[in-house]
Amino acid sequence: MELVEKRLILSYTDDEGSITIENYIKKGGYKALRKALEMRPEEIIEEVKKSGLRGRGGAGFPTGQKWSFVPNDGNEHYLVINADEGEPGTFKDREILEKAPHLLIEGAIISAYAIKANEGFIYLRAEYMDAFKILKDAIIEAYNNSLLGKNILGSNFSFDLHLYPGAGAYICGEETALLNSLEGKRGIPRLKPPFPAIKGLYGKPTVVNNVETIANIPIIINNGGDWYKKLGTEKSTGTKIFTISGAVKEPKVCEFELGKITFRQLIEYAGGIREGSKLVGVIPGGLSAPILINDEIDIPATYEDCSLKNTMLGSGAVIVIDDKIPLAKIIRRSIQFFAFESCGWCTPCRDGLPWATRILRKIEVGNGRREDLDTLYEICNYIKGKTFCALGEGAQWILRVYIEKFGEKILTQG
Amino acid sequence: MNLEKVQELREELENLKKIYKKGNSIIIPALWRVQEIYGYLSDEGLEILANELNTTKEKLLQVATFYHFFHTKPTGKYHIYICTNVSCMLNFAYEVVDELRNILKVNENEVTPDGMFSWEEIECIGLCDQPVAGFINMKRITNLNKDNIKDIIENPQNYAPEKTKIELI
Image (cartoon, rainbow over all chains, first blue to last red; front, side, top):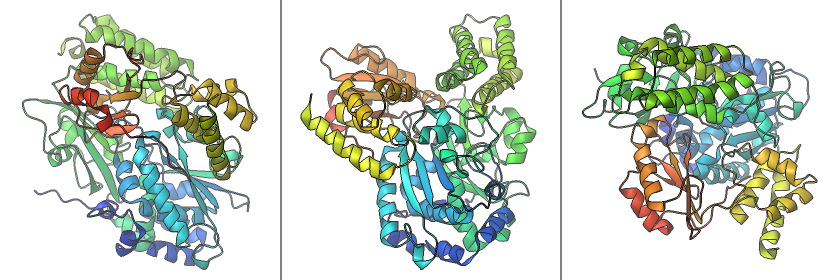
């Protein structure tokens, strides 16, 4: 069976993309904004709720619901777009930022209107150096066309949009760490509650949404929430952008209707596994998502199917693992990442992850013993449920699953 | 005191003040400007920043040291990052790192005696479709392997940008 993409967002990146406003308008751009400005903000939130859209950054929280938490208080609100795409294996937002900046800007304006924000920031990771210029030029074009600034398209709604540079910190993809960073502080997560919708940037109600989430908004407003909900499954509506990398012949970014494709098919779509190697497993949603092995990769790539297999769809970053690199080395490198990126606030994460990395290094060079696996499992228990944010939680989760699925093979493979 | 650089930094700060008006948001963009102008977070740059922003050098460093891209010591004229996270590692990133270490004969974050190069490993930079990926002075280098990394060291000017500057609005 031939695999056919459903390119809603990525259609804006086809051909010459839509970097310039002319190209974007040719592809139907800024129609949704005109329609949205005729609606009441509450109606937009209702439409997004109806669509069933879930946050595309990793956590999968329903977007419309997140928006509805913002109080109707007449005070200043903020919209923050999380473009700190740092989950290893993920490069979907890069595609939008570099090739369809106006889709993101249109989505931002509509979202800001819905949550009654007059100022917004795109928190962009410094790794995406080229995207700063592309977005800045697009933002200027939008200002010049009365799409940003005072009285947008002659309406009563005003909105300013800024770029904010990250400086290299995975944890700043966590929304409250991001807000601290955006306030010029160290990127340490905040205690929740209060959630950003109540107390966010500068202590004001704030919505933080991922780039792909925001890019879906013009599409939902153009076609309606009911139309969007018909795509995908009951719990995973719409389309999802996947990035496939690792041990495949043709790593790529693609967009499929949720529920219509399995992880095995995604590997095929990326040209299959590379020559002369055997598949070991698939990381389904970025490095924080536990590995799937054997027939588990025949499940549809959806939020609920991943959840049933004790993993997550996360950011949709599919990392294909083969046997060319020893398993212990892959696990060590993964945990080393989380140890390096730990912000240091919580002791179990700050001290537990480097400890686990040291043990994994020992295993990697062939000096591992059965008891080391027990110690690693114990470290997982020290971390689980005892940290502020999901970084340490994710690290112990993937390590635990590696031990459960591979056991002593970790000591001997490679 | 390098008057030209001081002047440039002051002008850049004036521009940033127009964009980032609330709280201390200006700090991270301003730290970037110091690094862009001086190549690292120099004492001189940080002191000007501290003065202009009504804070102290120590407080600025408290923020800066959280972020991997900020350097508190000079790097080589060409600073190279190689991603060794899982997707790049599966495509033999450590071979590239080993070759780099062999050619340059310095360890991670050390500068070659002629001041030309320094290097470090980096976590995922979102170029997993073009492994092995990295940066030279923040400009992308992709599809790296143990052979083509040699050319980058021999002809760095062909790969590195003339100037690195983050565009803000």
